[in-house]
Length: 469
Image 1 (tube, rainbow, N blue to C red):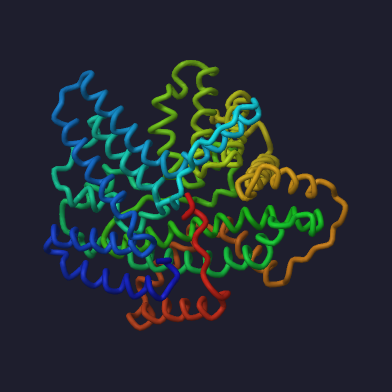
Image 2: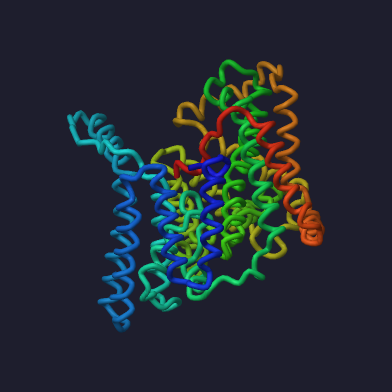
């Protein structure tokens, strides 16, 4: 069930109405939202509901057990078991075949015949995000930053809540569970904020990302030798805008939908292509993932507490695993390694200090950062390493400068670029105006905008890019 569809609109209309009817009965409301979230997930594949429920129940019991133990070896072993179980579930479904294929290739290169079995199952939707949410809860309980909840419905609700279930944002357990213990307050709903997030998300996904994808980017990446060098440069920029508009659209809609139901989600994007360094980029791009990796991986590895050499090691491990998290492919490992190397270089050159931005003129810093991010996206988007290298070879051949971009796609480039430069105060002023508008205007605006988006959209709505992760 995709956000920009009639099916989801009907689903949400029912969920919205029933949620607020049950608002004064908090437990029945949560059970209803859990049921709705499981139905939402079942629309993808009901066969994997056991993963969603099993992960929730297992981590609920482990956290209760861990919370009852004093500090010591038993708690550490229980945490290790919980982390291993969660990562093992992710590993079996997402990385087992990748591991087997690489072992087979290694053995074949050594002249050893191998017949390791492959796992013939589809990758469960949202398996990575389910794992990250479960680990967040378990680790926070271990650190005593969060008391284990004794309410099973609260943990079922936290892990399965449908707005963030499939592609985030990654919501910390301590931030979300504090919202489940009491009724939602209608005055806390930011109506204008939610409406503009949802409408903006629909526009970015259905119009900008879809036309960039279907009208230009997909064709160029599928057959780069059929296009000019200029087209390949433009397709690189186009994919950078496409993946931003696609992914930020999902999280914008998720944040808006959750807000309308009475729950707060954290910000996940902040105009990342304005970044003046790679560190700055990761403070703006998929903020909830980068902060999760920082707090649950980089810092436990030692972070910057053991000298520059260890800091560089911790950065590389964090980014390599962050790349691998996106998918079982060497391309994602290379993508993560590129960002890791860039972060290490910035650290060694002192760009991460407060005065680091002054070492380069802002325009130069932006150009270097933006193009590094775009080049790295080539490995992220390409299906294989050979495809990525072939793309780069043609792109840097400079054999032809003919451009096949249509006026419609060029307009999408403009819209995509505008998302990075529109100041926050513009949306804030629009929200103030909307809040003061009459009820008729408040209803008319979303109806008209949604109708215009539907009328201007291409046929069909492809899944969000991050659904595969």
